[in-house]
Image 1: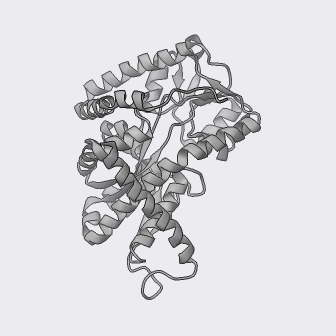
Image 2: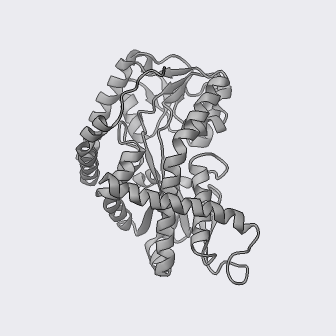
Image 3: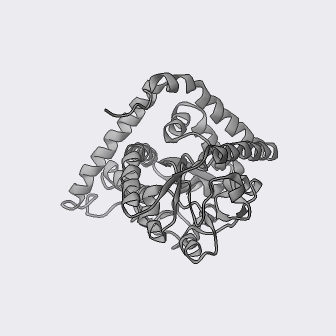
Length: 363
């Protein structure tokens, strides 16, 4: 199973390398026969292309598509919120107001809770196991069918690694410290902390920094360390808690309305799908290094990195199981997808333990 996955990822990684060469060639040679792409798709992104991680992934994906198609297809990036609010991109695609989107799978969870299994399961699989489930297990089938029910073609097109655990204005070293805290977390994690006595505060990403700075919220999550550093969270002078229990990994998607997707020539559809696989490989390879560098920069700027206490992590996990069980009972599709994912990850658990060397202190 791992050998097949490695072959697919290896092929995709080679395509990314080729895309890098194409970027250099683009400067000297216009695309297409007459200097113009024969087909342009306008794609709104949920991520600022200037930011690391998901934002960079948007740019790499579009460059890879352009290179693979020989200029026959170009994807024009539309900045976040330009045509429709990010959280409403699926609606806009269904209505025909948006041609294509590049987004976090979790935004579709408002339409169908099953998308949460791909987007943000607290204590869920990390990036490698998530992609293994997508490529070798039933993940891609469940993902595709869920989008088809909405009339959308959804192509897995990127993977985000673990988030930071959160920024806090006061210590949260015991379970009792969460009582009354006004915290920003995603939907499932918000239900978890609410069970611990915290008060979830739903905030758009763009408002969190200022609300936290002004003391209107007491803490919460933003994104990965690289993203948090790029957004200047180190300037707040607050401790940064790790690890990001609430989102160990998150899938990113390329979306088009199903009829518009099927109207594309088959060759272009295959090129987009292959470019998405290449993007996943690129993000898998880049993320660990980028996050490690970001953590060092945060420390150098004076940020105190704190680890959750064993009691707090145990409370997170205990309440996560309650929240997931309740969600599975409310929504059978969510429950079936979660059970499928967990069974797939569990079957390779013994191999993971046996194959990885213990963490020994360096000489």
